[in-house]
Each structure stands twice: as structure tokens, then as C-alpha cells.
Image 1 (cartoon, one colour):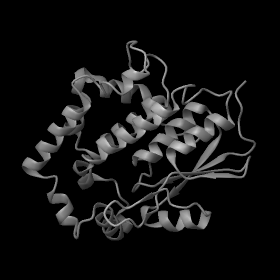
Image 2: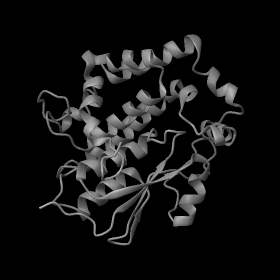
Image 3: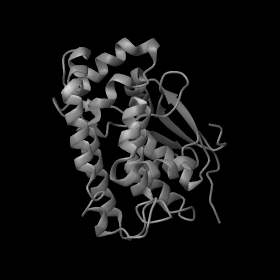
Length: 264
């Protein structure tokens, strides 16, 4: 029996520019998880410039700090579950909440793998964050609030100007970043960490034919790169490690729809 909320969960996601869609990695993790769990939800799209005020208005404290000065960093996702009166403001904690609250739905984090999932989440976030500068130039920001958004992103990166940020991922620097990312992802995909708890079945998912939250952790970042890179660079990246990453993104497509009605 699949349990559903008595009222739709409200999922607060960071809005891109029109057409509005998901692009940031942590909201991607939650959207993939909600769709996989088959719980009823609706999206509340939030412009990047309104993320901090939205989170504060909900009474959800920040879940991280800016790395360069230690000040509070307000970000999304957040979910509000009217059925239980619960607010959760961290993507990994959302996955835990969904499994605990809706246990008869498909399981995101299999029993006995919670600690390893946490380790994987931290590892993957650090790996992709250290290479994400190649995405900045084509982030699908809202053009109406782009000037304010640039200030916010410079603050996140600890740089003074937008031009300074873009220069870090141009020319030879860009080639070096991609070479570093390819090396970090291989030669055997995520060798060591995942092999500690994942079966060696043939993909497309890490455990074979059935996805779990580990796939969404990695897939969320890949989908951000897919949305934010020039097409030729994404085609190059999805072909690394024998096309493993492209196959993973393709296999996750069925969990990317917007809201419970699968309307886009």
C-alpha cells in the first residue's frame, strides 16, 4: 500500500528564469526523491533573491554557513508537510523524513546504508562544488533579478566582481577544471566509497536496475551541469567513464517531472 499525504507537501524550489524549472542540485535531490516516493506535492517557485526571506518567513533556520566568512547561508530546498505540520530545510534530512513518514512507499535509503549515504552526500557535494565554476556563465538566472543575483553569487564565491568569477573558468583554466572533474569521477566511477555498500550489478543505477537516494545525489549534480553547460561540453561530460553518467541521467528522467501531476 502506497501512503499519500492528506494534503500535498509544499516543496520550495529555486526558480530559474522563464521557462521556470529546477536547476540547482539540492532542490534536484528533493524533486527526484519526491517523485520516486510517489507522494503528492506541489512546487512553490522562489526567485534566488527571495530565498533568504522565504526561509526566514517559514521559520526554518539556515542549514549551512558561507565558507569564506562563516555567516548564515540561506538556501533551498524546504518542504512543508501540512499532513504532519512538519517543516524540513535540508535535502538529506528531507530524504530521511520521507522514508520515516511514508515507509510503505519506495525506500530512498535502504536499511543499513544511512551513514554511507551521508558520507556519499558530503563527498559528492564537495567534488562537484569544487568544479562548479564552469557552470556559472550559463546559469539560467531570472533576467529581471540578474543584477541582484550576481551580487549574491559573488558573496557565495567570496569574490568581488562577477567578471572576476567568470575569469576563473575561462580559457586554459576551463580545460583544467574539466580535466580535474573527469579524473575525480574515474577511472572507475566513485571507486571505493560506493563499493563499500553497493552491489556490482550492471547499471544504469549504482545498485543495478533499481534507483535509490545515492543515485539522486549524483544525478542531481549531473542535471545541474546538463542545464548549465554549453551543449558540446555536456555531451563530452556525459560520455566520460564509458557513458555511465549519460546513462544515469537518462534513466532518472522519469523522476524529473514537476509536481505530482507530471505536467512537465
